[in-house]
Length: 135
Image (tube, rainbow, N blue to C red; front, side, top):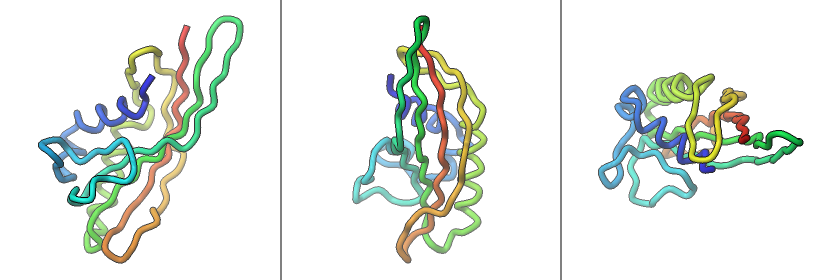
């Protein structure tokens, strides 16, 4: 089950998000791993797994997973970062995700915080908790 790919696909399919980010190799700049390619231009989004806890009982098993979704822009674009963050949050928070081997239970944005950056960029990180289960 690749939840990161589901998040990438969800963000790539929304023009409210893709209109706010650059392109890389002909696709929206949404990356499923860090570091991003050195020649990627800003703004971009990067998705990273934070934690993963599997659970199992007699009937079903599933996962409780946290992902950070980092949004990064040039340092002079403070209002742009907030617009991008709100678009990402609206596209994922409390929305259904589809993935290959499971079924969605719940996706919740649990935190939005400034990202560690240098003077050349500004960033915000949204943390999403994804509860999924399989029969």
